[in-house]
Image 1 (cartoon, helix red, strand yellow):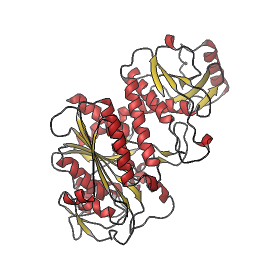
Image 2: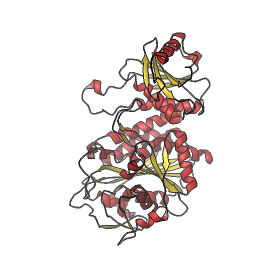
Image 3: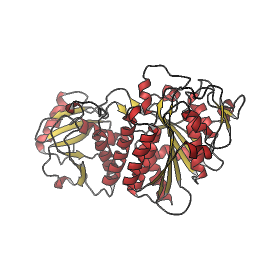
Image 4: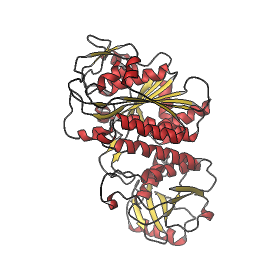
Length: 486
């Protein structure tokens, strides 16, 4: 799909126009008189036309897709992205090929709004039904050209929006694959392809290399599976020199049965996407490489299955993490934190002084925040706030959670330094406290628990059900921010 930014006078002939409509606000003046009249009739005759992400299609010439923008003054990058996505999704079953999107800049500025519109249109062009055999059930929309209509030049917004949208879809594609088609070995192969396209260096460590590095915590999770673990390391060097300005670590459990502490059968199939954190990091590194950002970034994705078996970890077993701390495994279904601590230590040993990890870590965070906010933990507070602000500007909603010494005390083990489970109360915070045990003095660290936001069980006007690719845009935006700060 090709994107181009145009002024209203350059629009020319298109098959459809997507128009955001806000409560009490007139549609763009550059629309044709018949289109404006049709929108006016719609507002007069129908209620709730401006309801957020509500869609109405007017069969004018060209077709007009009206997307509700809600109350004026509340537009941000997330809404701008979702408005564009809802409009494109409304055209999924049509034969239109050339589409225009009217950009509503409001308070965020046309450049950011244009990038969000490109990102949203790209997001809308991905479908989850890839393994259905009937072509009409997996056919992509016919749209092949999208014009972003703005009143002034928008710089590199088109390229940036496309890179972020493609990265988000790459993460969704990886997370959507069944576990038998996205094993640790296969996700490593997919990462190599993305790295090659983006000019990013990659190496994949096998179990023997990881054992030599002392990754006993990570390898303990892999013991029950016949699939070999793969520890993926991607490196973008945009400024030269040593060290890394940012380290990204993603949980890569390509299927999570819970191990010996086995999960209930209901919805266990969704645990194919328990590697969404790893997918997010892999996709973000590829986008960072494509954008040519002038900083050094290391991405780490410890990948393995978590299955029961004759060699599987048993509750009560003790292992030594790469940090040197001993870990008592109380619950084998609390495995994500076991792989992440070794990933965090590895990133620090390679020279990362800022580390952000992403993981579908705890059901407890979904109980606390539902499906609309990602849990945010970390230290120091100034870094946590920087991550939150950057995410908000990028169009992701993160909610800061507490992390104090009381929670760190609760994860002390009975026979080892730390234990991987310490009861249900405050479960998401205790999991973060476990990760904090691997964070060295002087490292700025943030943990994004995406267990409530990585998957949606129902279709929405702006997104199909299934994997949502959360946090990818946040990781890219953080890299952009640190590149600018240099």
